[in-house]
Length: 591
Image (cartoon, rainbow, N blue to C red; front, side, top):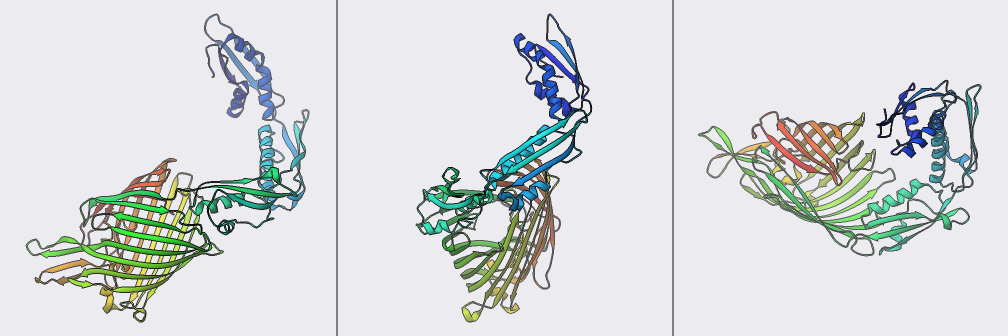
């Protein structure tokens, strides 16, 4: 029922799809007597057009109009659609260069008009529009329909559809020019993901735009195919660039609070200073300062493009990182229990070189050399070992889409690091790590996130104390097992201090095995709720004590990425930690 001050309207006798189409063709209700007369005059024509557009050419309309001195008039339409016109055959014919383009074969296999269907002019128009759009996207700028018609036999209720399209010649890429930058031209040329004279496609244009965006050099990018300047089917491309600001400052906040070994609120503040382009050779730098209680960190990374601005880079890293690990406790005989006294603290000095390359199969390979010196006190003994770690790393991430909150994806990472006393390290050490994360979405609103981390240190058991805490394995926190404090889980040892008192210290393990399974439900496109279970621990040969936590949270999909507020609850006490719960606030994409 449609109503207005001048006319009320009801439509009966047809299904909802036809009714909606009839109302759409009738248009807006009149708001004056003049418009009412015009509306009533065109009712029959508009209803007939609405029926025919959906294949009903034998429709009948019965109008009942009640005129009133006061109030709106009443119009009742009783519609009999009749038998629909059926598609007898569909003749789609191609000519021109498109005959050798498989994209049109794929399109043709998915065309949603077939013999036996009820004729629908809207679907027919959509098919024509899809074909023209595909032709333009594939570089057939001179394409045109040589025949496009529907022949209708009203007596037999049949329709014959003919679509003949001549694509003409396909255009190819000509010269690509760049304006508005201060880089060496060779750097930008290497970012072009196609060769000159390659067949044109919007996918390749998008790939060029994405390559330029990924460099981080530019605030604005416009890739403009210059169709009006094409000659001999060669299409020049103009790229207009605007550099980013010379420097940028980014502020990040995070933290967690709860009942665990560390019962206080643990805030985290990070300030990141970036220089996207240091010079005309495309060098860049990123320096981050992170503060949390007793855990200040400084790390600067200087990046130099080598054979390719994105796919081959040399990174120089310099850092001073102070961190806290595990739990330290002292035994109180009067309470027959251990009391927390703090954590294992270390200060790490880092100088590293890393070369990162993207292989043809999209794997990311990096090999590195890190010089590390770390100072810490364990079991009342001061240590300051030095290590020179040579490493190799392979990783690959596949994503179902390029959003900050992908609907699906898989990330895998494998690494090997090695240090040897013959090369100046304190002791021989081989570190092996593998990490996996899988994401998938079912029925639009149901999302699963699964994660597993595996790691091992191969070293002489008598020299484990000389392996610094940053090279050992701990668990706990929002990246491993929620519900527990950051890096507070792992193997421990007991020792007597100088006063003869029993102390207990979580010192980390040689092995790590943690996993997580999380279910997320989208309440709206930008809000979701989640529930999860995390399990595992860091451990040694004879000291594996798996812990499990469960919890839930609420996530906001913000314009800068998901912001997650999660509550985790530990399900068991360990020898060093009572039943624990933590609130975790994190931000960032999951792949």
